[in-house]
Length: 55
Figure 1 (spheres, helix red, strand yellow):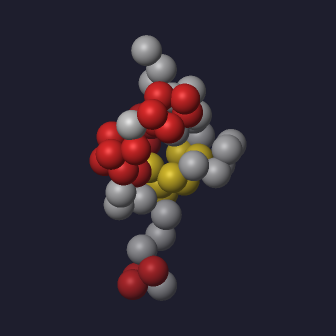
Figure 2: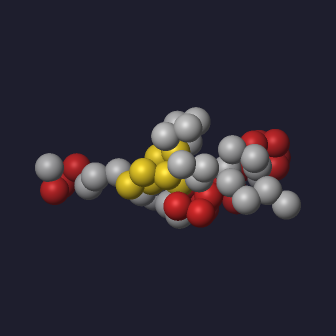
């Protein structure tokens, strides 16, 4: 079984509801492929997004 969203691409296309649970709300972005997720373990090279309200 794949561990990151990058590797799970085909599986996620088949089950969009499951995909939404993994990415919403987006708190991290993969600096390798640009995907967003709410858990660092789902991304290859995660970087936390800054909260726009704190800017």
